[in-house]
Length: 295
Image (cartoon, rainbow, N blue to C red; front, side):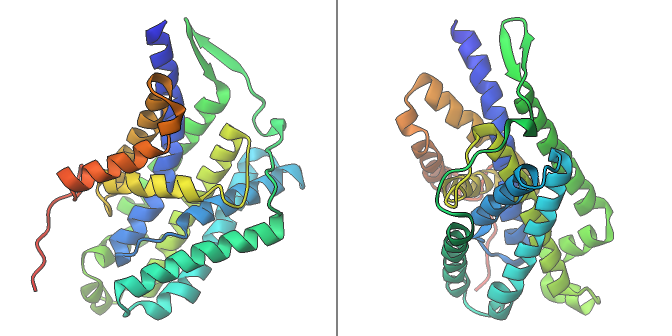
């Protein structure tokens, strides 16, 4: 029946959208702090998937500890990337930093291919043994529930960190006025590194969830989800955390509805069609406000 297909695709879209939201949060946090589009963020998502895969399949670590390990390693990668590639260019033109981010993305992909190989790899079934759950005529898998629940838990944790911790207050201060925050004694470089760490950790968690959802990991898996998550961040309002969440869920649901009621050929194109529409109609995003810059 048509409504059953719609319900199934909405469930699939929510599961996929929750991973897009986690990746988009990294984009929007970094942009909110230093006005940088970190195009290497999708590749940290890919590294997180590999870290989790190795922890589970090679060292037989259960999913939750494996995810924590992967998030910690990805956080270190994010901090290292900021320290080596971005911090020396803090005062450079934005185009210089943007090109550096693209170069860092290609470098991480090449290193991943060299270290992990170019072949597709799969998460073992023991990561989350699949079970079918029925709600009347609607079918849901336990993997979809775990993915959605994990994503929501991480988003709530991020909300607590940003709004109720000392580092979160420092992040908001740096986002509003970097120079004034520095004059108030805030270590701006440390706050930026902390922001990269959190964003990278969330991307790593999303990498594991996507690896389990689609049962496929490869060195280039971060390119397209990274771009779609960037579109989600722009859709919600780049630099606005709730906007990234809304944009992520919107992208996941839209993508699955296009596959169900249109054609899978347009699955990836829909993201960029949405980006063009947003830029034409409301460039500041759904939750963004138009800001006039003085010359």
